[in-house]
Length: 500
Image 1 (cartoon, rainbow, N blue to C red):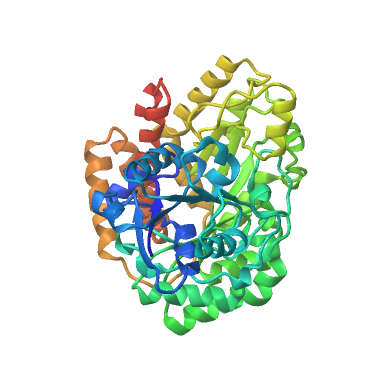
Image 2 (tube, rainbow, N blue to C red):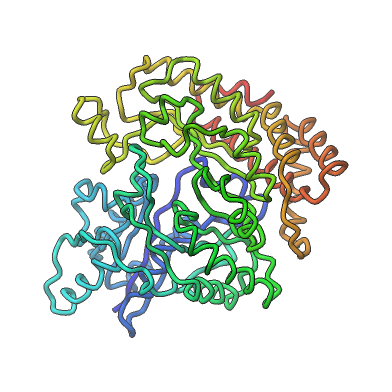
């Protein structure tokens, strides 16, 4: 059987990095890890072809080759997913759909022939057996959470890996916390399940075999949730692996703010190759943190925590939210000031949205405050709930805050604030040709053509004098800023501040 694995296109969003990718001549930030894993779970003898619409077009010849299409997507990819499904159905190609988008909203896609929902380790084998017997059902769901030590390594060889800026692997699933706006526990539960360190090393070796030497994203929603195993097993194994093979690959991941409480863990992560963490800060408003159940962010000096993590060699990226019930119009200035003081250059700020399956969604539904479907785009200046703040005041405040945050004057100031605290790990390595070309393009696009050229050159001069080891990061962040301003201009009606 010929299986076509289809990954829909991402729209132009905060995390798409479409405008930044042009500087390094890449097509997409990350590969479709879920589909690569699904490919490894299919029967031997089946032919597999991966089409990631973020790196290449879906051709009629691909559809004619296939006996069945497998589609996986996140909510933000829903528009492209609909187009892909329509193309498959137009030629009579059966469609099997799974992943977060379909697990939480499969009823919105009546054209799909078979839904294989929840975690594929549980539901895919049942579907495949029914398919073998000639009686596949419309919907497969699972109530339990599988043991991921049995999960096979992704089939990296299906990738056009040279078109990606980074690779991705997964160590754990689940999160112990109960934030009411987050659907991670709806999808993966509260219990932390991990792969073994041997599995992770095997996956990393697989990436090396296909020639990958650049950065790798550990996609875990909270990488540090199983601290004892990290410190006892995985991180020492990564440190040994790097030493044995002379690896210069950099890792990045997501975790909670309480990483700052564990000096040993931060030191091990830095030695293992981690140089960046994304943390859900959400808000400096303690009442809002209590309201949404994010109590592990309360009763702590978050600014000092962020500085501690940055000084340990881990650049902090942050997620922020406005529009909580307890927020007042002063929240926009408070968020802006907090982000500026923190030196969090990559600050994703969105208006609160209620995702299907979350406690917030159920509460908004009960209170009659739901407004249609979510877009999945965290920073599109919209929401699917009726806020307690005047909706127009909320949107205008959000737009003004974002315009200020990503205006060159404020953005480049955050880069300098970060570099004053951040102590990048000393990894051996050399500049790659792609990095040198990205720097050359940035000098033209940002330093000559761009309206931010004064801020760009002043930042580079300061970095060269005071933080030479951080020059590659400074250039990367400048390029990110170009992307973020493009996205803001796309989503926000009044972008005049972005040119200052």
